[in-house]
Image (cartoon, rainbow, N blue to C red):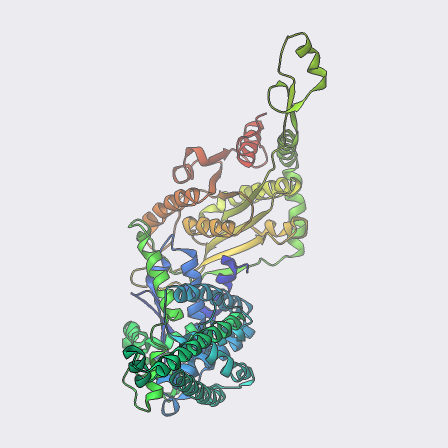
Length: 634
């Protein structure tokens, strides 16, 4: 399954929009490694550490999947406190309701649906690892498997025999939950599933007792006084062997798809969920103005009873034990986030930015932009021709196959055989060197801050020239402008809360000739946070299949956040460039009429030119050297 950072960002943007007021949910940031939702105060608490620079993308995707899950409960799960079950029935209801609310939420937003799919596939593999490690929790295993089947996902492990029995007995009823309209419908199905599982558990116990040797047979076998008793024992042993064979055979049938009910494991930690929201605290009285009904609860653990404390028949206690050892999706998320946080350096932790409100827009294309583009294109036509000619020359040189005569290894050159006859030389082979391939992808990011007022015209021309040249030599590329928007408020522990506005002038999926006129709309606006923008571009490139990944950053100098954190932002830009290069993404800074960006990108990764309309031979050579990684000189 393909899953990109932009898709995760899209999902996160939808969540942020919903949390802003559509469902009356408040957001707080605090310590810890998992997002939690408090249904009483209708507050979601997010781990602040996930906003650190360099935070692991896989862990961030997991957090977003879990966050979408929590928000889905806030929107779609409504159940009065008095009707909320406890114990095993609650766990079954949670498994059923998780699938229902995710189906409803995923149908509303494609990005959210892809988040759920990504999280489910990730958790599926983790369950396989838990089973391989010897985790014995057959009821948890079966609920997970049924949830995966509901999503059309094949399980990555073979169900144990007891879990397979639960799975076979209750699957049809579990899948029928797709017709549920609300949480009360889900509760009715959960009760039916619970009855089926209890009956299956009793049948399994009865079968086990019937196949277990009684004590008298054991004594006779040990004493050896009764040969008949020994014979009886032997028969019983063969029955046991057959039972084991039957169990193994049944287990093999459990390879059909199963989904991670683990997310319902968010319920397995109801107390933790509420505790993490203590920061949301003081707003409790303020929450009274929301549209939340005090009697409504989502299934995030409010109804969960502590392990071993439930009343009821022994069978329910036995089933409860079969849920205990399996790790929930939230447990997996917490472990992954904690691991990612442990790999962050102290320097990385110096930059914490609020990214949830960042905006990604596609600039509107107007007729005026088309007219302006034609004039701008004409003004750089000479420069474009020079760059294109230089690049095409470089590519032709790369694409040429070379033959080296008079070589010892290689193919036999019959024309050189006379040299052997005359004892002149034994180098009668020709070595053929195949052409190099230009496997490169580029993202161009453009600083659209207010300080670009005297430079944005030149940057616009440079973007056009680079776009035209890259398109002609068939290098995939994106062009993204960035500035900050309004609405940032001070949040403790955050260096940047003003949202970054990403303006996507051209995406990888778009044809340059169809959208190139958008670039005529490049302008100057507010502030710039270059480090985060370069980091975003590098993350986009990590999902690309090309081996050579390059970022071109067009700016006029140092980052300016507008929030008194310019020094930290400048340091973060340097760190991002270094980290991106270590991860295989080359970052180059471009300056038109200014060398100010050089101090952040480094002398070896900075390109200077006086004017976008006068790109001399030196610039063309430098640009070709970057694109071909120095493999061609001219």
